[in-house]
Image (cartoon, rainbow, N blue to C red; front, side, top):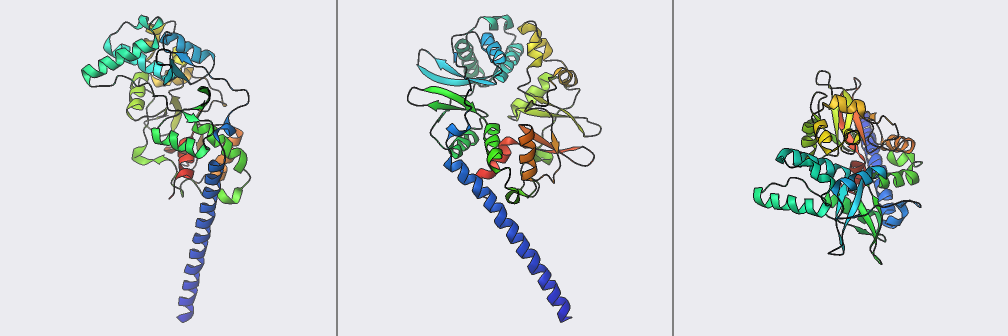
Length: 345
């Protein structure tokens, strides 16, 4: 009896030691990345030959949108020549929201070809004061000094729930670049990909990502307009499209996917496309494996190291977690991963 009790105690003791060791290694990995973020400035993630587009708020909103498309950019700072300062960030998805706003209020959509950005923003602000409802929201300009640390930049992104952070050279107020969580993750993977032992825990064990009832999904027969409203309500930049019968993920609609706009002949045609079902929108989307918003899946047993390896091969904004039957059970974004390393839990 005593020998059995001794064996049980030894087993419990061994398990406790292993758990403590894993916790120490886990904390060491997080601390190593946190120190890296504290010791490197934003300059370190800027591309040597990058480009930045800045819009004068007097130019027509439609022209600004097509300029973003032409330069393959998702966002650009807005410069107010009267105030002589940056006043916001315009994204390709803002134009979609403005189209939805014009459609819902019965405004003349063709006017977008000539109406300036500042004029539309004033109009929206006036409508907001009258109705108490914000029809759409242009993000305020919240930049970071190019000399600030990556940790400070990530905290600023997280604190303001922004997807883009303009990096400003304060001596002459030039915007050098707009960085994202994906840019930061790319930098981390480059430096920590080989340190396997520090990142052997699974995303499930680390509670990284969104799962269960918190997961927002769409179905292929829903209209694009309904999907965009759902994303707006939940502050999402992408939405998994799931088969309602099998719960299997069949695609992803991202707010950066503007295929339905670029194929439209004019703004009115683009508004009509808002009523297309998601299944048709997905069939028109660019099926390029290098697209960060392309559908990529993983299992709950995926380790941080496996995610680093996947990211090194092909950059992504998020991974969709599926079970053995390919049913969607969660999502892990670049933001989730960076937030994990910033947290003190």
